[in-house]
Length: 263
Image (cartoon, rainbow, N blue to C red; front, side, top):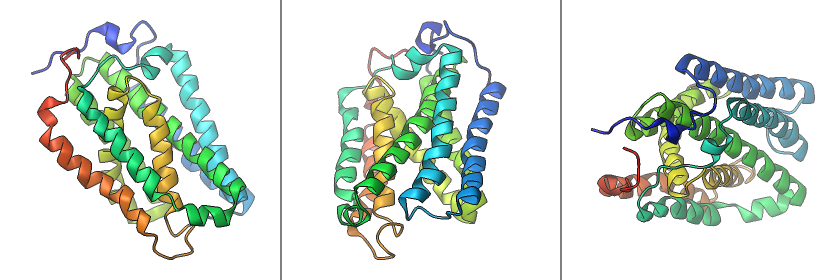
């Protein structure tokens, strides 16, 4: 049985954060994204991501505000150091997690569809998806992980609950996507655990934020949004990330923790 973290590892030199306050912060974050997205769609008249204008209004603006809110909260809490730097190392073999993601990203991007869309659309979508990556990782693998550690949870529970919360908040996509939000939330919880491991093996919150954004960029580039309803084979690579990593991590689950971790 793991012992709780010591306070030094949680960045508790900054402000303390309780579960209810964290829940409130997450709700505000979601309201900015969901409410801002609905407002921008109404004001711009755009209802998809088929044009540069649509991506700018429906993604860049609400996601940019949410990103600014996230790092504003981090700065207010005095948690910039523990959010950006992780002092809970894993064993080196866990680097396979970001490697698998990067291979899927490189092979899964629909380069042909993006070429047809043009460089301005591609850059705008890339920025928008990086806003997703940095915002969500800052909120859930940043604030969430530091908060859970600061409240005395063992690292296994930090991994579990930060991933569950990450998946649960995606149920709000039911507002625009209906019942399909449920299986998405389950898959997102699993992805949250992968991003948590990337945070730990890279000893910070940068690589997981970049990979998260690139992974979303890959999914969008290979979907019907860009490929005019035709199937793009590269779409299978991001999907295969999940079963491949599940098998690898189940096999090596007892060899994840480093002897240097506070457990």
